[in-house]
Amino acid sequence: MNILTTRVLTSALFAVSAGVASTAFAAEADLQQAYKSTDVKSALINVCKTETSKGGKLTAAEVAKYCGCAIESDGKLTNAQKWQIQSTINQKKSPSTLAFVQQQNQALKTCFGPQLTTKLQTLTEAAMKAAQAK
Image: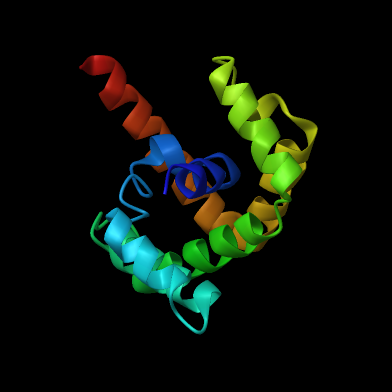
């Protein structure tokens, strides 16, 4: 689960700090079950939808859009890119400094559309302020 979570969190534009996706992935058992599915991609999207909906920050349509875009984007990462992301994290650096992550984030913005992108940015800022207040 660790690598999958890392990939999705670094590839999903605002996922980490938005709080929206802080629950984007369920317990390891749910992910393992998704990987046993005959349609893994759809199963992962469904796990994402279920968990992201629990945050109560997005509408059902926004959750569907977010999860579809995030899982699709994650699926395009190569193993070499995943290793590069993990290496960057291990160096205590932000994966957002990597050129392919920046390109992926641009593609996610396009996939999300302007309304969802703006909403995720707003949620990200609120989550960051709340985290700093702690």
